[in-house]
Image (cartoon, rainbow, N blue to C red; front, side, top):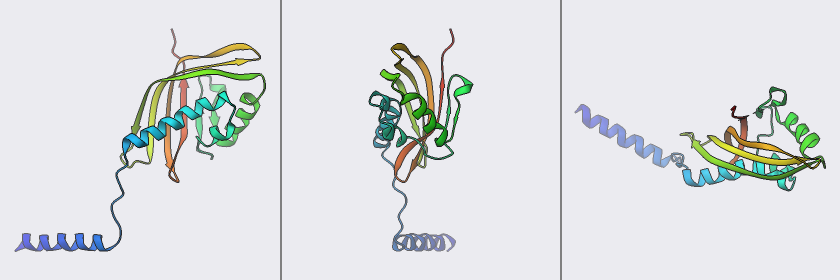
Length: 164
């Protein structure tokens, strides 16, 4: 008799859920999500080829949660306003010219809820300052993204350079 009551309760619960108009959240297509995330990661570096700052800014969180660790501690970025200022004062200057980049060994992991992701990669990033070449080879690059209002944005990044 007890198991029969539990079956009745389970059926009633299923009926109530199906009539409520609510359905479980759809499971995200991890392949499609990872392709979108890859585009955002690429954009956050590739924007510099044409100095398309709007493209860059749309790839990152535009609030105080945005954070970047660069290889030197003097270049740590806390908050979008600080980031925007750095972009305008450094990368938008005529002396700066992006000359190429390559994202290698990109690994992306999605959270179970589908609204957060983290990545790791190696980055070659080359540019010129007033005609003098500079850049990174095999920089370690990690980051965290959140899906906000249906769009992936980077909220945190960390760059480090291998020693030796």
